[in-house]
Amino acid sequence: MKRILFAVILIAMFNFKTTTNANYEQTFFDFSIKSNTGEIINLNKYKNNVILIVNTASYCGFTKQYSDMQKLWDKYKKNGLVVIGVPSNSFNQEKDEDSEVKEFCEVNFSVNFPMTTITKVKGDDAHEIYKWARENHGKSAIPKWNFSKILIDKKGKIAETYSSLTNPMSKKVVSKIESLLND
Image 1 (cartoon, helix red, strand yellow):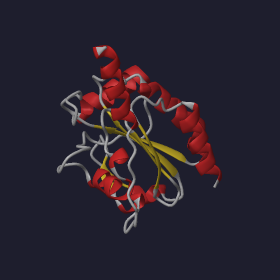
Image 2: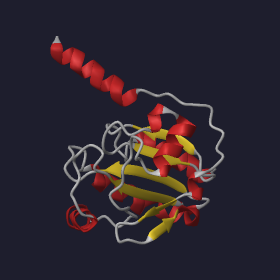
Image 3: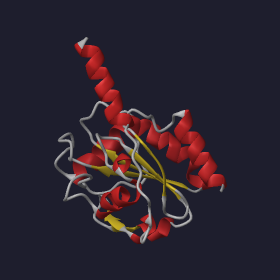
């Protein structure tokens, strides 16, 4: 009985969707974030692209999703998809240094999509992008765990959010990406 209750709570936690009435005084493209090599990524350079932003962690049970993030990037980058990995220690499962994360991702998953510096993704100290996401999309945009996904449309607005349990190559993610790329 305890296992069933735990499973129900876990599923509810990862599938809870609440949206707000977005007014979008800013779009995703109005922000910047530091890359894992120290350069500032001006997100305006990705305007008119579809963006999948994923908070990641090296020591998480979902870390193998890096492989599918890379597959997604390889398959759709020529069509206008940008995958951005945002390493975070908000759930205490990330390495200490950006260089360690970069090496881990390249060696273990051949990652070559854009990656940011280790970034806070929840709470008062969250990066501006994650605060903006919450203001405009509600609680479903707040990462509940590592590998939460936010899908941004070509206009820089949140199209959808996905929990850690949703694989980047799942049919529902890929279908939504294809739809947004064809808009």
